[in-house]
Structures are given as C-alpha cells and as structure tokens.
Length: 387
Ligand SMILES: Nc1ncnc2c1ncn2[C@@H]1O[C@H](COP(=O)(O)OP(=O)(O)OP(=O)(O)O)[C@@H](O)[C@H]1O
Ligand SMILES: [Mg+2]
Image (cartoon, rainbow, N blue to C red; front, side, top):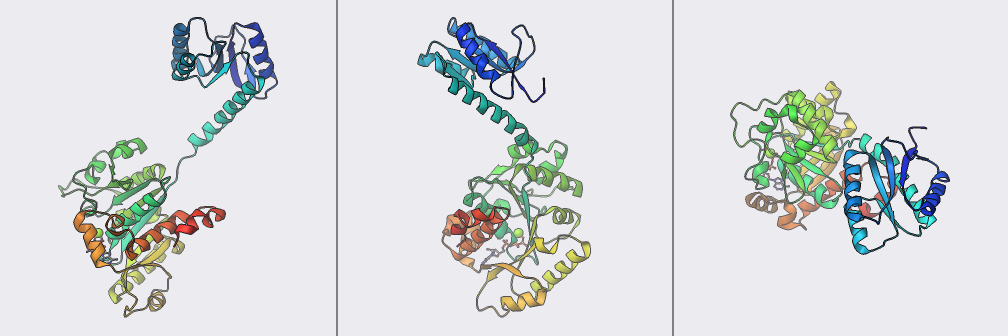
C-alpha cells in the first residue's frame, strides 16, 4: 500500500455499523482498511464503545499515548452527554451516534485527510521573519526612540505579528530606561548561553513588554564578559527570524564586525538622520561604504529624517540631492512627548497616541506591515490605517 494512504482499523462489534463504515471507507479515496488481526499501529482507529465506558476510555488513552492509534473516532449507541464529554476528554476526534449517518462519517474522514495533508507543510515551512536594523548617522539622532516605538507600533497594529526588539548598544544600551525594564535576561547571559539558543529558549528568556514586544536589552553594566562575535550574531538573528515576524534592532551608530553581520542579514536598514550638515555628510559616507562593501543593497536602505521641522534650514529636497538617495519618511520634532515618554518609561502611544510623532512612527510601521502583503490587501484594511 502507498505510504500516502491513511491506515484505518475498525473495532466495531455491531455488524451492521461495521459493514456501513467499511463501505464508506472503500468508496473514499486515500484510506486503507487494516486487517482485523494486524498488530501494526494505525493512523486512525474507529472504535465502538458503550459496554464498559470506564475501561474503554482507559483503553483509548493508552492507545493514543503508546502511538498504537494516532487518532481515534468513536461510535456508540449511547448518546448521553457524559459519554460525549468523556470521549472529548479522552482525545477522540469525532463521535458518531448510531444509527450512523453516512454523510457525517464521510465528511469526518475527508476533514481528517485534509488535516493530515496540512501538517507536514506547516511544520516544514520555517518562519522567515524580517530584520529591521535602525542605525544612527550620528549619536543622539533618535535611534532608540524610533526603534522602541516602531517595534511597539508593529505589535499594536497587527496582533497576528510577533515582534522582538534587540539592543545592540552593548555598552550603553538605553532600552531598559525607555521601557522601564528593571531586570531581565540580557545580552551578557545570551552570550554565555550561545550554544543553547533556539526558538524555545529565546521565547522563554526575552522580556515581554505589555505592548507585546519581546525585548533583549543590553547588560546594565559591563564586566568584560560580553564578547559577542559575528558568529553569535548570525546564530541569534537566524533564530530570531524563525521565532518572530519582525526583529527590530536598535543598532546605535557604530560600524564594527557585529554591525556588519547585521547589515548583511537585515531585510531593511533604516538610517536615521536629522537635517543638518554633519548628519547628511555621514549618511553620504555610509551610503558610499555600503556601495563599496556590496551590501546592504540600495533598495534595502531607507533614510528616515527625525526631528523634522517644516521651516528647517535644509529642505528635504536639498537633502535628497546632497545624499543622492530618496528620503523615505520624516518624523516630526516633538521634544515634549519624547521626553515625557522617556521620563516615565512609557512608549509614545501611552503618552499621547494622537501626537504627530506617534502618527509618523505608526506610518513607518504600516509601511513595513504592507510590504509583502498581496496587492488586494493593501487596498483594504491596511490602506485605511495608513493615514
Ligand atoms: N522626534 C523627536 N522629536 C524631539 N526629540 C526627539 C525626537 N526623537 C528623539 N528625540 C530626543 O532626542 C534625544 C536622543 O534620543 P535617542 O536616545 O532616541 O537617540 P539615540 O540616537 O538613540 O542616541 P544615542 O546615540 O545616545 O543612543 C532624546 O532626548 C529624545 O527625547
Ligand atoms: Mg540610543
């Protein structure tokens, strides 16, 4: 018999019920009836109960736990609620009352077959989440502010998406201050446990912020033990991609061997600048460096102007001309709301969800959520929230 066939065993005393189910099985593609004296495990056992329920439910449990039957359908002439409840508790997938209804049995078999066909594709297909790397063109331009609130906006806008936030400022990371995190597992401990890092481990150790963002902060102080290597970064980000739909990285402004690894793996690099000459000069240098290195590709690099003011001495157009790259988004200047958020350890939406700065960051999050969605979805719900 082909390995694709679902093996079924019948343990049914009533000859009429047994005959009817045999007929249905033989006329439904994909099922193979096991011989009654077979000792092999089966994919599906259809079992008649009703004589000694206690013993029968005990049997069902042990058949499932030993793997002798991967799934069980029950049938019984008794239709008392307690029988149904017990059947459910014992892990039966379906219950057919008697006399059986052919249509009901056939539909249950087809549903079972469909479910089995879906399982391999679900488990085989690993998640490949997006890595969003935020980098400053200078110190103090707002990378942490944007990373924290972009991660929170992603999580809040779409509850189906899992989001992580990683602080790559290993020496002076400020995410614990921004999110009022008193103590949690941090980078130092992750480096010490690098060999154990997998999806389950990561999910269990990251700090769960109420916004639904899972956070990996940097250590509160340095003891010389944090020696992350590009290999550790590669492994960590690989596991992050399998675990989260979005991994937002507060990358500070350094270019070292660790950030190069992130730049190599990132799906999108957001270069944060403010509209002044030193920042624009640095952006030009960074873009030139990326071009020389061959990564990240130009289309992955998005320039974000932070602290934008309409009466700025340098216009957006002039800035674009000077760096020869499009400015993707501008986030308005709002010192009051950002400071209130930092001082209270809150995200911007908690301080003022209607502020222009929060709207700007939310707009950035929408642009990320829209990418990769089918065109028809972009015109529906997502287009409505994209301002
Ligand atoms: N859009 C904004 N409008 C006004 N102030 C802002 C804005 N974004 C950030 N700030 C303020 O700028 C200061 C620096 O912000 P932040 O710490 O996020 O920058 P950073 O790039 O992470 O700095 P560092 O290089 O020290 O890590 C903070 O006081 C913050 O409140
Ligand atoms: Mg910072």
